[in-house]
Length: 133
Image (cartoon, rainbow, N blue to C red; front, side):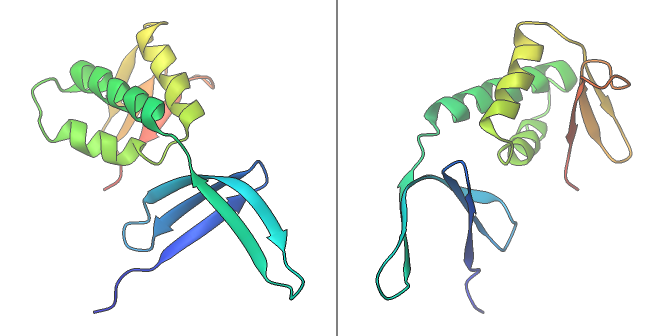
């Protein structure tokens, strides 16, 4: 069996992300240091790992808060939630954490296609987290 390959996505704002085909989760977050083409036409991209320590701390805090509000006794739910939220951007996690932690917005869940809502799910400004099946 062959190993799953890694893909890179480059963005204009100087960020790059890598993912493995299997699972399609982001496994790397990089800052683009340089992007140049040499005399022979080869593109040379220099990447530096992006510091995610603050983001991961916020992610764990959000998972903890949501888990306590929705299912405080479950040991599996926080793991599923973290697995879902790990692909969210730093801005998204910070915005949701602010709504739950500082603004004390209501947190609810909808079964079926399982979703978690921060705020009133009927309003445009509410956050919606779709849990993978």
